[in-house]
Length: 482
Ligand code: BG6
Image (cartoon, rainbow, N blue to C red; front, side, top):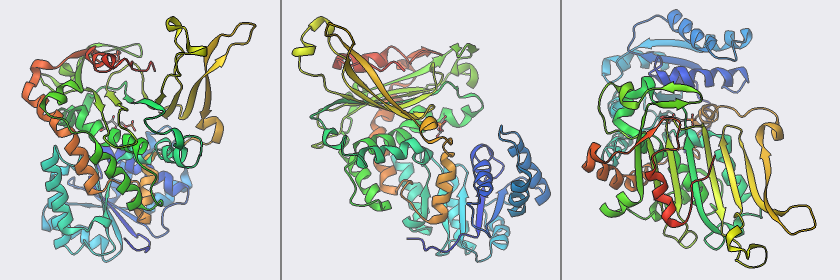
């Protein structure tokens, strides 16, 4: 485990890139404004662009000023005082030399906001420059690889330089309050856990829907698609949190051990099941939130077989979950931005209140709203007031904003603090990443084989291709209306 020494340097490789501007710089600024960064921390931006420190500070100020929160003068003064810049090609030993001069022998976090294809090369130059010292940590962004093989290769290259306890693989969904609350919900209440199994639960649905398209990101996205971009990481993590056994303690490895067990228990696809249990789709022009938006191929400027929608049925072959399907769906340009985990309980027996086959009762559903309007809701059956016995579904709700007041911090804020503290609980361990790749790889291989021939389209502003309904409806179940 990394020791408790305060981190004194944070180096962002890729400091002028999209991720740094959208997530890292604002998160660091907000942490500083809340007095949460180590007192002596200096932040070194590094990228290929040649510029002086003043220019970089100006650039960071511009990034922060574009945000709706605006800049607080005192907070900016302190934050800007932490900033420095070093232009470098960090895949080359000579480039890393400049970084080494800035960092010296201080305990440092190296944040690789770069293409994963150069993670190995950067680790090598860090090592050669004497920067991979015992107190340093490295942060890696997803996607870690393109498939199981490339993921293993990246992990091996990184592992030659940094021991696993010093490697922090980000999955920003794990930094979301509502995602962390899944474990609190399950293991801080006695109510749910006795029912959290195949005796009481019919199935689980996990939805991550976005209204945004791919837009400017198509260069990256076209190479990856929704399965690699969302399912292999974020959705697998959500599935693990729902399905895992209670860990022996809250330590990083205890929690991650349990998640790996879930991934290993996932039923592996063969060629036939890969096509039966998965559906992909690509958006064509349509209307989202009242706006006419173009097709994916128009954004990309040509034909492509990249999927922007995925629906999948996953089965977990262990005692707790045998016979309980997990239905996953995610897509861009869907009607609504909403992420939800829904646990649907089994129907009550068809007697008493549920004895009329033409008016079956709606089952109990516990839904965890990951975002937006973070919270959770339980749909239960209740008697409608009146002389007759009539049963009606009602909702009990908890909403974060009204329950706790303050809005939740950005996921990246929490994750950056955890890296500084050396706490890897919310980061993906190497075996987890590889087990998740192992699960999705047969589906990728299947799609690669059929290519563009069998790529259903869906109109922007709809819930994906009709084939997604055909995935779930033959099982006698339906996607939730969200
Ligand atoms: C990223 C994906 O990891 O997550 C994006 O690369 C996606 O394609 C994003 O839009 C969604 O994150 P959030 O936090 O907005 O749900």
